[in-house]
Length: 114
Image: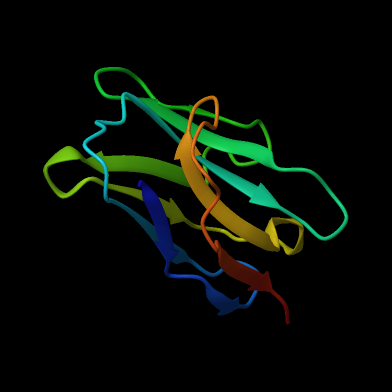
C-alpha cells in the first residue's frame, strides 16, 4: 500500500524560507504527475504546485515566484522550496498525485508568524 510521508515544516517568520520533502513508500507505482497541496483550518485542500515527470511545473497564483516544486524519481521524492513566506501560507502541506488518488499522509505543518 502506498504511503506518503511529508516533512520539513515548522515555524518561520514572514519572509523566511522552508523546504518541504515528500517520500512515496510502498507499492510499485511511479508517480507521473505529482503535486503539493495545502489545507488551512476549516478549508479544503488547495493545489499549490504540480509537476509532470517530463514537463514544466505549474503553480497557484498565490505562490508563483516564491515556491519551487521539484522531484527525484529515483528517490520517489518530491520537494517544495518555499521562499518569501507570508502569513497566508500557514497551513498543513501535503503531497499527492494530481488529481489526488492516494490516501492523504499526515502532512507537515507550516506556520508563518512573527
